[in-house]
Image 1 (cartoon, rainbow, N blue to C red):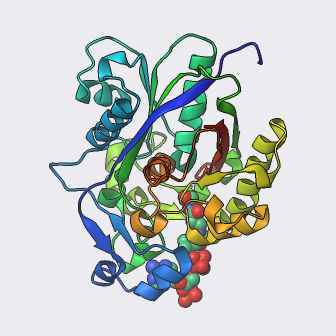
Image 2 (image 1 turned 135 degrees about the horizontal axis):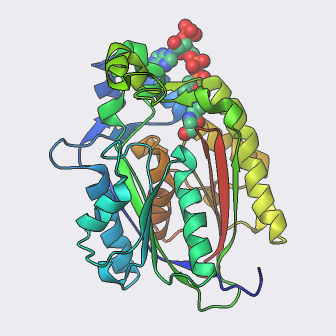
Length: 336
Ligand code: UT7
């Protein structure tokens, strides 16, 4: 492992739709209150896409252009695309190839999708990291982009799920690190499929005969289902575990972390993790208040905003961590 080169994040960018949906707006659609949403999740507002303007692929492309610009690169420099989303533009093909087209990349570079929901970006980052480490590619674009709002049950029936999720995109460019001991130090990936149905969009599943007709007849199963309490219970255990795993592997203690960027699942989950790890407020990044939970897009949007706000300096120890549907969970430890 040590003989392989490290990769580093050379540039990050994000894009969110311009339409802001506040908690007060949601009270017009369903029986809920601003207080309930704020107290249980920390969310104050989220973004919803604009039909005809925003797509999962073109939001990913907008974030990618910013990430490439920050890295001093152009789309033609990209050698591989890894696209994390649970809300692809099409059932198939994946959004990775659409992103290639959106960016005007003519070269037949590889592009693929990662379907790991809230952990999608960290999984995608890990995959990209392996390709850079082995020397197969030098410049890999890693994208997380989601449009949840078109697929939510925005009635009282769906309120336990639909108040949480929001739309947006983030991207990062990986390059080989030129600085000894810097870059992505390690990544850690986990899954526990026994909980697959605890957070799920079931239809249109392929194992029903005549799946299209079946899905239409059972249309409610096209909305996300979440056993929120069980997801919460596992999240507050798995986040600290996978962060600790990353620290242990690299000989660090929790207090060595300069900035923890957790997947923005719920502010209460983040606060629980912060307390369990003994981290002060300035060492944990949260922007769920403004965007809700954007699943695969949440970590790169947060990373992008943290950089914009000057919360990350050269040499800082940054930890990314995520947990969600699958269940899947993951972390990445980065010496910036
Ligand atoms: O991204 C990773 C995946 N997702 C997560 O990490 C989410 C993890 N889970 C959670 O964040 C929380 O479980 C939720 C925020 C989803 C829900 O909070 P909770 O404290 O677990 O509430 P609950 O589901 O136990 O519901 C409590 C009550 C219920 O009413 P009764 O049965 O007690 O009368 C719900 O019907 O709150 C009701 N409720 C609502 N009330 C107003 C559920 N959603 C709403 C709502 N507005 N939007």
